[in-house]
Image: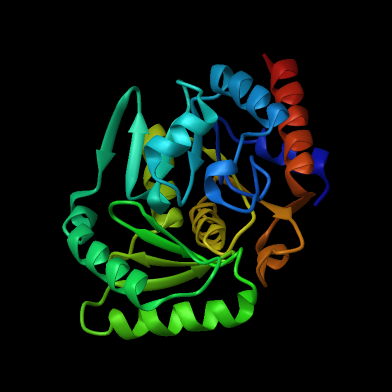
Length: 265
């Protein structure tokens, strides 16, 4: 599907909602998470879209307060920890079903920190989830194997989920909650009839599949935008309705969307 065709399709069902991943979609992938910044063009378009659309949201694996600060737009809704946290209208909500697992996740992360002595591997505690990053390891493939193997061993009795992403292995609560379920809940709350979700990583495939299922009902339009990069997971292009090249391509798509919506007003 071409970009203008995709936008015409979206505008065929109103109102429209937009949701997007952060890292690799609105921000270039960087050596460590604290170095990330929001692309200027993406941020400008999100600011304009938040004035036009009833729903603009950013979904991230980061903690919700962190992604809110990185984007810094007050009219945008932020979902952190893959949807387990939400920042909306100045308030933060943490899913209580997830919160009860925070002590167990903390304990597992601390065990992993003691046992994994791999140069370049970093540990990130995020409350209801945790991440171990191996991007800076001397041998990332070997580090991934060691990290994933140890975490599966440490979580065998607790049921805590071990989920792999882009150069990261995550610990998550044993709940059927992810970016997809969080996104469907959000678009139901805002009663949109057309929705866009853009992402670049393995966890974004959950959102792609969820909006495609949601869009099967009559008078609903769903568009999955895959942000292509050298590290994209298998299946991203196949699941996407439209692809753009990297963060620059995402900025271009958002700018075209702003222009199309401005003409409609």
